[in-house]
Amino acid sequence: MNSEQQTYDENTCANIFLKWLGTQQGAEWAFKRAEEEFPELANRTRWEFVARRTHNKEEWIAIEVKSLVFSEGESQFNNWHNVVSDVNKRLEGKLSGKYWLAHLPKYTFDQRQRKMLVDCLKKAVQETAQALKKGTQKDISPNIVACFNHWPNDTRKQPSRIDPETLQLLYSPHPLLLLKSSNEGNSLRVGVGPVVGYWVEPTLKKALQDLLVGKGKANDQLGVAKRKGASKTVLLLDERIDDDPQAVAEVIRSLGISHLSNIDEVCLVSTFGGEHVKQVWSKVG
Image (spheres, rainbow, N blue to C red):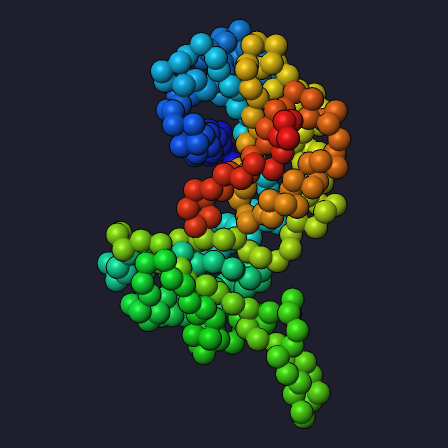
C-alpha cells in the first residue's frame, strides 16, 4: 500500500470513529496528525491522531490506526472489489438506488471465468434489483448458477441431498446476497467480505500480536501519547474483510494486559454495508 493510500485510509477510519463517538456523546470532534500537534515527534515513534471536542479543547484523546489484514484476505478483498467495480461500471445508469453484494465466497476464478462471472453478475443484479425495496435483500446465487457453472457450492453446511446414481453428496450453491440500502444514487458495492473462515485463531492471534507487541507497535506508540498527556488512548483496527468482533475480542484478551498497558480501548472500524464501529476491548469493564 502506498503512503498516500495509507494516509487516506487512516483519515477515513478516524473520521468514522469520531462521528460514531460524537453521536454517542452529543459532541463534535476534530482531529489532526500527532506530528502537527507535537512537531518534535516527526520521524520518531508516535501515534496517528490527536482528537479534541470542538467546544472543549483542553482534553484530547490519542488515536492509533492499524489495518487488520493479511495477504490472503487482502488479495481476496481486492479481487472481489475489482470484479464488483467492473459490474458497477457496466450497470451505470441502469440501477435505481444503492446496492451491496454480501456473503461473497472465496475467490478462485481464472481470467476467463472472471469475464463470465462479470457478465452473469451484471445480468443477475439488473434483473433482481428492480424488485427490491429499500432495506430488503435477496439471494441471487440461483441466477448466477444458471449462467455460470464455476460458482462454488456451500460445503460449510449439510449437503442438500445425495445423487442416487453416483452417491455423491450434493450441496446448495454458495449464497450471494444483493441488498438495497437506499433509493438514492446508482451504485453497486462490495458489502460483507468473503466469508471463508480466514481468521482461524492462530492466524488472527499472530496478526494482532504483530500490530500490538514490540517497539514501534501500537502499545508502544500509544505509550508515547500517554506521556504527552492524552486523557484516553484508542486503537482502531481498520478491517478490510468481514471479521467476527467476538473472535477478535477473545484473541485480544488472550494476549494479556501487558501488551495493552497503554491502550484504553480497541475498536473495529468497518465500511461493509455502511460505516460501523464495534468496541472489542476496553480497560474499563
